[in-house]
Length: 459
Image 1 (cartoon, rainbow, N blue to C red):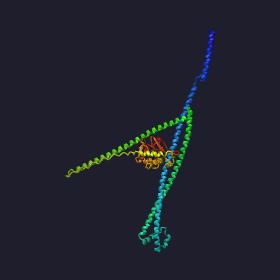
Image 2: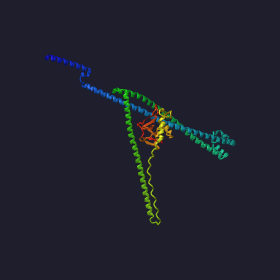
Image 3: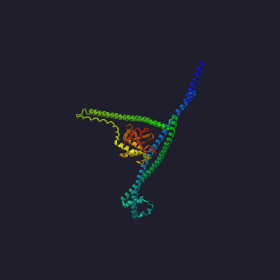
Image 4: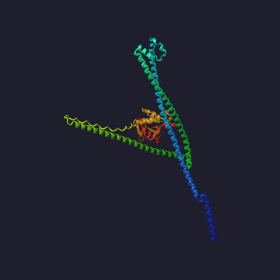
């Protein structure tokens, strides 16, 4: 009986094991594998570490790629500003040379008129003084250069001839001086034109380099993002969006850091200004007190000297009024509606191509050409280049802190080489600019890399 029971139980157990084994095998073979060894775990960790390192390396390359593109664009902007400055100098030299040549031609014309007048005198001298016939072959074209001819002319015509000879001599000297100036002006014009051509060539090379950098960095960025997507196990589209967000965050951090740096710089400048005003006021007060003390001593001495006199001592002169403290620099006038009109004028140029030295609305503009023509629409004339506009504004009391910008104000970028870019502030943290060769006028967010601490409010 027990044997039968065992047999039945044994068969049931075997059946259960078989069925369980089949069920387990249906769930997958991992349950049948042995636990991973230490080597397996080490290799997995190493693979994970390598993948993380690959991701980090790709992200560094992406950042370097972006920096390379930005550096190339900045170099193109610098070259464009240098070309604009050289163009302004060449235009000025050309105008100066044209005027100098015109003045020289006019002076020559007057010399010829004086020469003709002298010729009339010489002809009369020849007719009335036969004794000079032997000297005629030795006379120059002026006819009255020799001492003998001058003597005879003065004897025949008196002061009139002498005056004509003096007039001719003076005009000849003036004409020589003006001709020399014209020659120098033309040499300056030639040098300025050569410099402009050199700047134009350099600007074109920088533009070509920037365009090439844009293409190569865009292609490299696409390749790196594809590698990053593969390393992370995502899609290229998702990784592209992720990188765009990371780029936005990076720019936001840089902008905030730049804002803090600009605020610190502005605060330091304001502190130096106030310290200078306080020192000037203190010096003025010390001078006032010294003058008052000297005046009091002089009056006391005068009273002592006149104490024995019966005449009434005159009343002391009043102390000089204290010197007024230096008045603070006037705040720039608000741009108001004029600034909004400037923004509208600049916005109407969105899509117009960037052109070296361009200042033609709807045809082609560079950065300073955009700012200049936009302000010209409200009757304000600006200098031609970005650096000239910055210096003109700051030196004339039109500078405004970046933290107090209004629509229509001008913002500038520069470095140790000088100011190289300008844009129109559109309000709301945005600008309108002609950015670089190969691009068009656009509206974009204000970026803070190399941004100058002061903007300019032209009116």
